[in-house]
Amino acid sequence: MEVRDIRKTYHLPRGQTLKAVDGVSLSVMPGEVLGLVGESGSGKSTLGRCLLRLTDVSSGQIVFEGQDITHLGERAMRPLRQRMQMVFQDSYASLNPRRRIGDLLAEPLRVHPGPDGRKRSHAAITARLHELMELVSLPLSALERYAHEFSGGQRQRINIARALALSPRLIVADEPVSALDVSVQAQIVNLFTDLQTRLGLTYVFVAHDLAVVRQISTRVAVMYLGVVVELGETDAVLHHPAHPYTAALTAAVPRPEVGAPRAAPLGGDIPSPIARPAGCRFHTRCPAAQERCKVEDPALRPVSQGHFVACHFPLTDD
Ligand SMILES: Nc1ncnc2c1ncn2[C@@H]1O[C@H](COP(=O)(O)OP(=O)(O)OP(=O)(O)O)[C@@H](O)[C@H]1O
Image 1 (cartoon, helix red, strand yellow):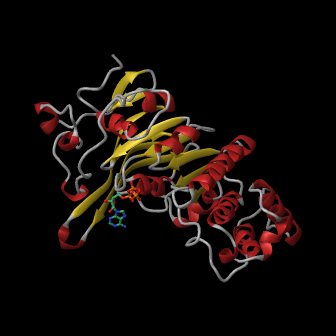
Image 2 (cartoon, protein in one colour; image 1 turned 60 degrees about the vertical axis):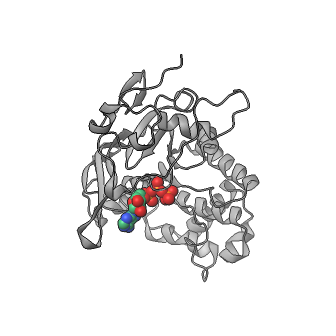
Image 3 (cartoon, rainbow, N blue to C red; image 1 turned 90 degrees about the vertical axis):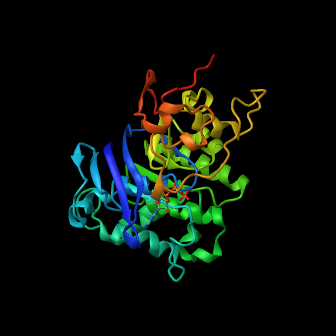
């Protein structure tokens, strides 16, 4: 997927505008896991929804497998929906409590044609449901039960099974483990990793927990107030951050292999995206801000091969 300068503006009552995504360009390569991190309100969920066209973008371009999908209508999007799916944070809200799990999972299989382009038979649907249960390590008996009969972790397995039903290539997972207990989180992250290897999936993995992102991501994009401020390989971004914001985020996470933290944890709140600061949008909280940062918005530019930062004074390792 190629994303070019996409923006999503919400028009609020009283004429205010909120730029939730304010010019993001990035690519998602086949088979990679792109972690999207940033504090609450930075625009991660909105960007994830824009990528899958679950919300309309205000401007910019989204190209998926060579096809410009930016302005496709719902009918034209339908065949593409099979190839891109979303897993949400709230495992309960996304499962209809009055329907058996087997019924919920069968629905997309009934609506969309099979790999041969024809309507799936009852037997083909049943066989696929069994495969899905195996993929997410749930017993077949789960198909007969209702959402409330499962734990949060099991419900997230069901949501993953539903996302997998139509054999997608790309999955956007929006904080898929944030609502789970820590021990369960690890199991679900491992499940995502196993599935990725087995099925050759590509993920955009939205999370505010850097430990989770470090574990699963090939590359990381750090968002702040609607833009990507740092992008690169996971190790480069999280272990050698070039943006003071990333450095502050990583400083908040204890790392056993490193003694003293590299930067002070972040103070203050994220400013309102309705009245975002002029110049570099991070300057009001940046320990290294200078005069230039108050007036000039830095563009994302390379600091090394494949590692990009939007900062006038990027950090170096020495
Ligand atoms: N439907 C909407 N109408 C108006 N504003 C919205 C809407 N959806 C999101 N926003 C605003 O857009 C900004 C970005 O929100 P978004 O949920 O994308 O951020 P996030 O980084 O995913 O945060 P969180 O982790 O809290 O979900 C926030 O200021 C939010 O209030």
